Image (cartoon, rainbow, N blue to C red):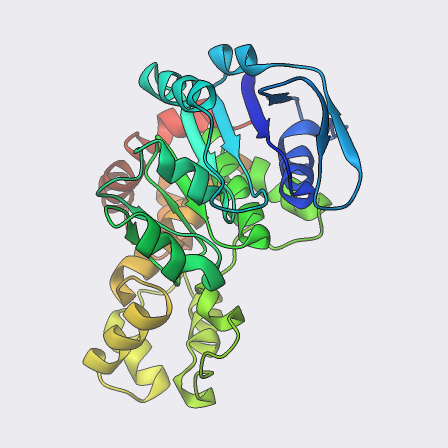
Amino acid sequence: MHRVVALAQPIQSTFELACAAEVFGIKRDCLPQYYDLRICAEKPGPVPTTAGYDMLVTEGLSALDSADTVLISSRRPIDAPLSPAVLKKVKRAHKRGCRVVSICTGAFGLAQTGLLDNRRATTHWARTDQLRERFPKVQVDSDVLYIDHGDVATSAGAGAGIDLLLHLVRNDLGAAHSVHIARHMVLPPHREGGQTQYAADVPAAQPDQSLGRLLDWVSDRLHEPLSVEDMAAYLQVSARTLARRFDEQLGTSPGRWLQAQRITATRALLEETDLPVEAIARRVGLASATNLRRRFVAAVRTTPAAYRRTFKP
């Protein structure tokens, strides 16, 4: 069991903890239980919430000593200082190899630990400037939905916290497991784009500038040997213009995005089918088993065969 411990602090936002409970805490008949979710507080007992009711938390900070993932979510005020005891426990957990994750403005608490210094991080679009000013050593990215460094991860607004948690499940247990959880939550397993599309007072992209049509077109044709030039031709733009739009809207290049889609499709086929690697390579547009193995190892750091043994039910 992977133990997830969420830190409850007054005045605690309830939605982020509910997201964690949906992803990590609910036992579903169709899936094995891999996560054990606990809630802890510096002072066990009633914890005031932003919803107006108290939350009864029975475990203290000692729960962090055995956590595999520590979750820091939003509270009011958002930049309230963490106590020395909380800071010590979180930093000690990280030092022994625990993953530390923040949702929404929980990034303000996580930044106080110093674990985000000289690293990219994100938070709610309305608070990115404040985070940048309050913690100048943090490289704040105001557009992405989440950023995962492996040992430390941050999400944008509360809804993007679900995107991050599903991403963590995908990394821990495979794409199929993450898709099952998303399906039960009636959510897409992965959203494209950044949070700028949801931000107020940000000029909307012109319809002919959007990548949505192209992303759908490519997703339906992963089995074809598509190139960046093919993608640019579909939108009737130059390869340079396409690269600029991808950087602005998705924070990556067209080639890297296309490669990531092929790897994601490969992971799902390895988990959910018995197809040989050669057949999977053709289905995801990588032409040959040799090419698939090389690219898969580079992206996932393991071979297709080893991945299948680990994640196929």
